[in-house]
Amino acid sequence: MSVSLGIRALRRWPEPRAILTLIKPITWFPPVWAYLCGVVSSGVPVMSAPWLVLIGMVLAGPVVCGMSQAANDWCDRHVDAINEPDRPIPSGRIPGRWGLWIALFMSIAALALGSTLGPWGFGATVFGVLAAWAYSAEPVRMKKSGWWGPGLVALCYEGLPWFTGAAVLSAGAPAWQIVALALLYAVGAHGIMTLNDFKALEGDRQTGVNSLPVTLGPERAAHVACWIMAVPQLVVIAALAWWGQVYHAAAIAALLLVQLWAMRVLLSDPKGRAPWYNGTGVTLYVSGMMVAAFAVRGLV
Image (tube, rainbow, N blue to C red):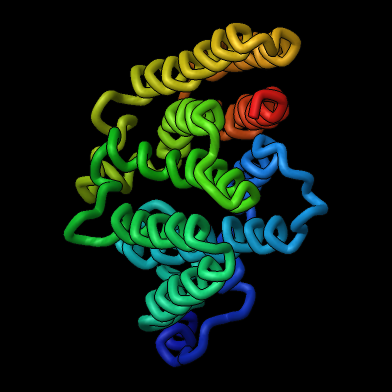
């Protein structure tokens, strides 16, 4: 143990693999997918501006989302020392203030890349970068709230990229139907973020992070998360049916029915089943997003 600690103390440069772990590639999928939903919903042919699609995907996933993960890990290094001491920063694989420097560098890179997407893309990038730091860093640290924190992340993971993809491809403000769908799916994603908080339950409790699993307990928090995920999808189904997109509404209804089954499994053991639901129910949820994007494409 003393030898290991000595090696950590002498390390000056971060391990390359640890940097990749820090920016968590597995988390890039939701914002990239949401951006593509925005692209599809805009009704603009993808091949008319493929570079805007590619740049937006890189910006939403590896750059902005990766930056937010680095910022969160830096600001949460004391919490991670309790919950997950093998994470890159508390383990010493990313030593000193390297975690902070990486997050700051990626913030600047995000703004530079966002500037290539025009005023709408740049404005959305500014909002995303500020939101990432507001979520994790003191004195704001919205993560401390089990309501505002997951809400902000859900907005930036699902609603903001969707809006951005549509705005960038349309070169203007998206139609109100697109904005409505993006907001509804962002609201529902609050439940997904709540389930994600289950893995940090003990560390959050000890460090004053009032996530819903901490304040409500795992069982009640899981019930609240399920309602938050389900109700916006019901509104989406009703809206699409009202707009005449009956087949798309039926497809999302079918996906929701399977989610309801998965929710019953989740509620049988909320803490133990949360990772399983994140791989099962969430896949069905984001599939419905793309169905809705194709539905609204025919309206705008």
